[in-house]
Amino acid sequence: MTQKKSLLFKGVKYSIGSFPLMFLGPIIIFSSFKNQENPFFIPVLSIGILIAFLAGYLLFKGVKTITDSLFNNEN
Image 1 (spheres, rainbow, N blue to C red):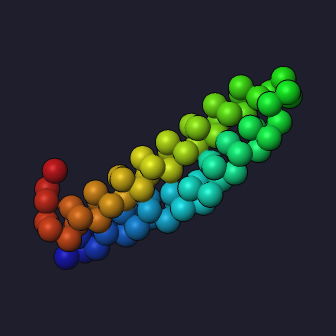
Image 2: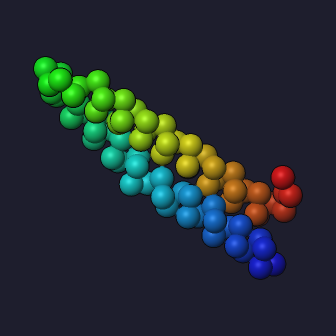
């Protein structure tokens, strides 16, 4: 039971960690498009896209870990 509970909390940590990135990524992307004449447009845009993909990955990994802990999947 404690192993399932620790796995559940690990999944919740991943999911909670993705929520700030879900807001931060689009904010950075939007602000980079507002300043297209800036020479740092491409690096800031790529950082924003990377953060947005990281948020999606962490959310997917968190939900997968939570479902693994709930349905007793050992993979």
